[in-house]
Image 1 (cartoon, rainbow, N blue to C red):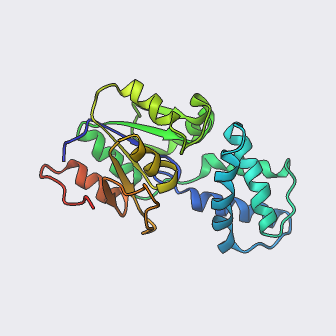
Image 2 (image 1 turned 180 degrees about the vertical axis):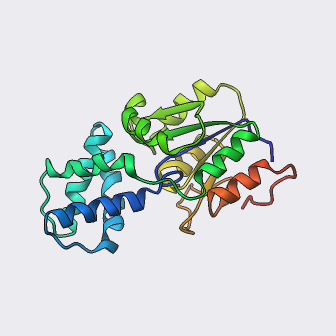
Image 3 (image 1 turned 30 degrees about the vertical axis):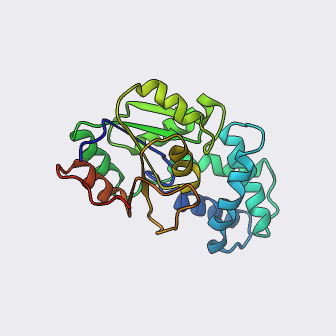
Length: 229
């Protein structure tokens, strides 16, 4: 499948296992504070809180992480101070990549694709994460650069200006943050649907794969894909 020249990815949730990173950070900090919290409640609570914080007046992502940690902890019965909540931003560079991330990126790079990331983070945080990757990136666009968070369109508009007329596919795990807004802009999308979720209204992707390994395999074979829904 060689219909595209450029592939961009969301980072956290698509290339980086943000759920494990956040869960482990919360459990470590709670244990240090002598607080017992339900591990199974961390990600559901955080997933509801963070998009709300992002849609408030723009703040750097370190601030988003800190405020989201405070509100998430409160839902879990943990009265966490704003100063103490900085543990979450401090943990981000240690969030691990998925087991199939680097092999998939290497395969795509070897096939000649230009690769990029469109991420809802600050420049320095993404730079710290890039040490987990074994390939260089051709394009990096962050929330800090565009002054807003996906699902706002600024990441995609900035990427289009830099990509120009090259054929471009955006791949992401978040239907809400990435697939829905990319679809609205007429951009081809690949949903890396690791959790087997149902798409939101407006979130039906051009292609859907259960992981990055199967995505990379489809993108590097010569015959037309049969993966489109």
